[in-house]
Every structure is written in structure tokens, then in C-alpha cells.
Length: 195
Image 1 (cartoon, rainbow, N blue to C red):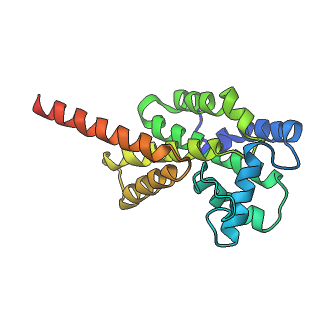
Image 2 (cartoon, rainbow, N blue to C red):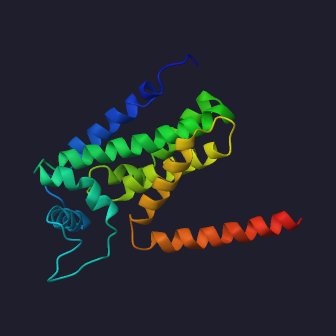
């Protein structure tokens, strides 16, 4: 396979996502999107939530990310496009991670399988945190694995830590899941170290 810029490999996905937004995107936030927009408005006013009706079901990560779009009063289309770039960024991380192990063609196939996962495509035209979660998980995996490779750079540690911390702020249950996984990982590391 000819070596192209990795970004060109993902151009067809960009076109597919753009069509999904055009065909299925709403002009106003719907469902959970209304709550995310409200949380963004509260952030812009310097509050975590509405003092009269506190609602902390969502983590602050996604509302904080879309706050500039909400603050500039841009159309919801821009939030949908942000979702596109987050999913494409996650797919690019998967491609970059796997390319050296399984080759360009198979790494590209794996990235496309993730990017074309139907439930994920359905999140593109919504105001929802799933695209951010995919980006953060893929970025965390990429930089964490690079920390243990010969090609690692100091920024890999910092980016892995940042992605994991921001992921913990994405949904209220995520810090508990991360904590459980850390405990399991430490336990497995201790078991295998004894062998």
C-alpha cells in the first residue's frame, strides 16, 4: 500500500459522517443534549450546575468541551462536527497504534471497523459524550503503550495521564470503573510478579 498521509485514509469517513449529519442532524439539541447544553451555559456563568435544581448526572468534561460553541451561540452543527473530529481522532489513534504491529492495511481496517460501528455513527448527529469517550480511550491507549516502547517521549506520559483524568470527568460512573480496573491491574501485576 502506498504511503499516504494518514489523514487522507480517513477522508471517506469524513464524507460519510458529513452525510449522516446532513441527513439525520437536528437543528436543536435533543434528549441528553438539552442537559449538556444547559450544563455548558452554567459553566459559562461560572457554576457547575443550576443552584436551584442541582443535576450532576453528567460529568463536566463534555459540557466543558462544547462550552465555547454554546458560548458563541453557534449552531448545533458545530457540535456535530466536533463529534466527527473526535471519532476520527480516535480512529487515527487506533490506526497509529496498530500500524507498526500489523501493517498499514490491517491497522486501517481496524480503524474503519471502529469508526463505522453503527451505534457510534448514530452518535455523530447528537449532542452526546460517546464521541469524546472514544477519543479519550483511544488516545489513552496509544500514549500509554508508547510509554513502554523505545519510541516514547516525555509527552506520552502526560498525555496518557490527561486523557485518563479527562475520561474520569466524562461520566459520573467512569472514575469508579477506572478505580476498579486499576485495582485489578495491580492485583494481576502482583500475581504475575510472584511467578
